[in-house]
Length: 331
Image (cartoon, rainbow, N blue to C red; front, side):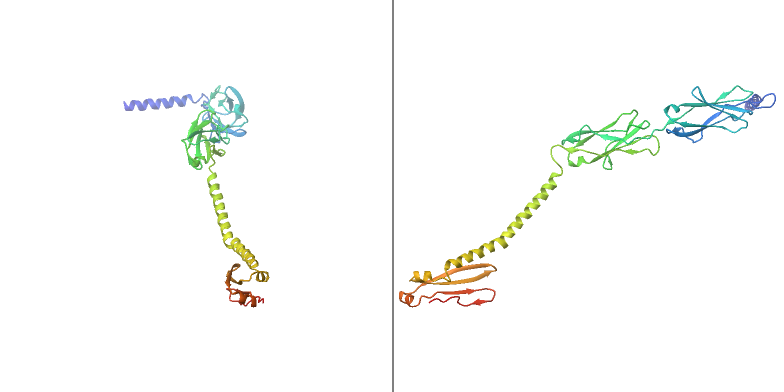
């Protein structure tokens, strides 16, 4: 049985060789192969592409024709066995579709290649991140939507808060926005949100604009300002208290001392003349800088002494080491 199988296989190969040759020794055409020169069927608008059509067997001259669907695009005549190259420019979406080529010579009426389908590569546009409202309340589920207006489908969207992903990738098969929900529990949930869009093409990832929610009930930035204003007010109160202690009170005491000195009548003898029973002594002591204390000491003398020698003594004692003697002696 094994030997019989080998004989059948050999017979099949010989019959194929006979079919590929004509009576005058020329080869019969084989089906051509259509391939993209750039190696990919992904194309962009205004891109130049090349297609190679080649038949492995067949005697020249050969006629190659390129078709888009059933419409003839271009024809090339080859006198050698080299592939035929067709150059195209993808100007619009209508230039993308099914292509095939045909080869023919004087012996055979023509054979067709398999079809190729170009896919238009549309770059992703920058996705737009939006929400129905920017003001939210605590405990609210806020809605975020992300959409790229342009780009080949499917498009995969991912949502972020800062650099951290907050959702699983959402693959959209239609030009519709991807949606996610964000629970606002505190001010920390009001950070910067973004979304990312990408499709099956390489190096087409795009990021959206930034979006921030605003808490409607209260401002999350108010607490630092309240603390800051409180510190300023506290500093003002402390400064005012120190000013009263070291500047205002000493000044008031100085003015009071000056008034007290005048009220004792040191340089005046009117009261001596009016008083017959008293002799007045005045002493001024410097307690602190600009802080003086005035006091009077009176004693009763008998009427006889008063008539003979009505005298007023005054003495100033200064604590910085300088002492003055009697200022006046009136008799």
